[in-house]
Image 1 (cartoon, rainbow, N blue to C red):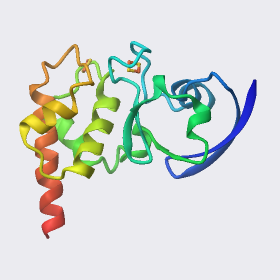
Image 2: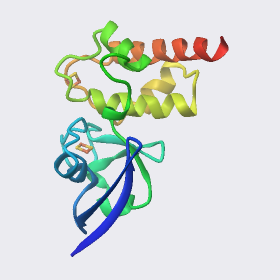
Image 3: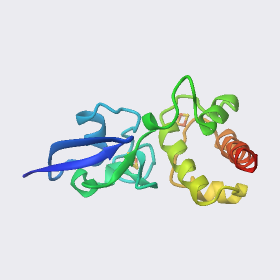
Image 4: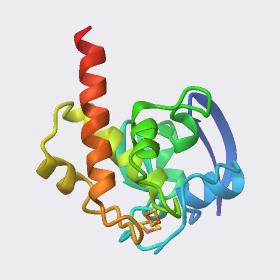
Length: 160
Ligand code: FES
Ligand code: FES
């Protein structure tokens, strides 16, 4: 069965017919051609597909497109750009927290959600928030350092 949904993705309103069993991940990647969210395990275990739904980090492989009708979705394509990267993206690049990059979009969006809720996290807070974002390459140290560094930079920006 098909249904028409209207969803705001990266501040652009999109109206499309979707299958009732189409995942949000498939909708983003195949219908909207937003391929930043990655398909890893496809069963809610790896975090490669994380996007923000009304500001909360969710696994888009475990969410149906019909469930986001009327809501706001943010993908990595909506966070900064090559000319003006987000402080999280700058910190990931500086600290070499990106190797193959497969986990990076989901990790950055999870971190963004954390910093919105807790602008001054401890290392333990970061570790707990990122527990669902698996990275096979970096060993996590650089990722955690990057999130803490971005938090500090963003905090200074607020304090100015
Ligand atoms: S692809 Fe969604 S959690 Fe792994
Ligand atoms: S950088 Fe390769 S999986 Fe994280």
